[in-house]
Length: 161
Image 1 (spheres, helix red, strand yellow):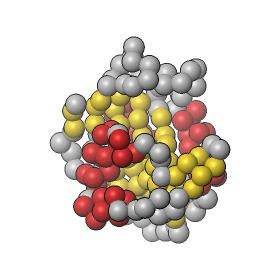
Image 2: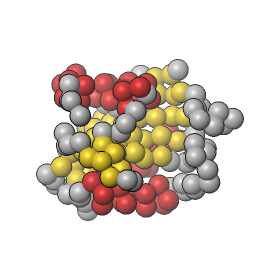
Image 3: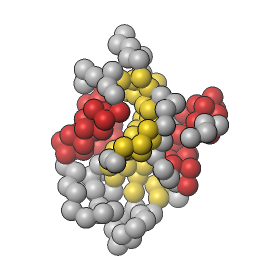
Image 4: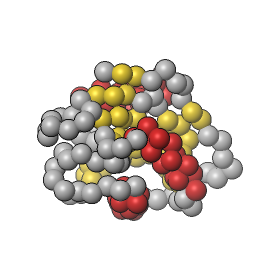
C-alpha cells in the first residue's frame, strides 16, 4: 500500500451551499493521479458544487475482479446545492465525461465516484445508500478520509446509522 506524502488541499470560495458531501474517488486506467487533479478543477467550475478538501491518495490492490492494475483512491469533500439523487446523476455524468465505461462489475475504470456521506444523513434508495455500506471496511476510504482532519474523522466515525 502506498500513501502519498502530500497534505490535504483546501479551497476557499465565495460560493456557499447548504449541503456537505464526501465523494470517494478512484481509478486504475491511465494517469489516474493527474486525472484526480483535472477532476478537482472540473468540479470547481460546476455551478452546483465546490470542492473544499481532499485527502491523501492511496494505492491499493483491486477486489472483485483482481486481474487488473492497482487502484488509486482518495476522497473529496464538497459543498453542494444538489439533493442526493441529483448529485448521483451528476457524478455519473462526470464519470462518463472522464471516460468511464461500465462494462462489467468491478471492471477497470478511468474514474469511479461514490457518494460516501451526505451531510449526516442516512439514505436508502435502490440506486443509492448513504453512508456507503462498506466505507468502514475500506482502507482506500478510511486513510484519505482520516487524513483530512481529526474532527472530520470523529464526525463520521461516531454516526449511528
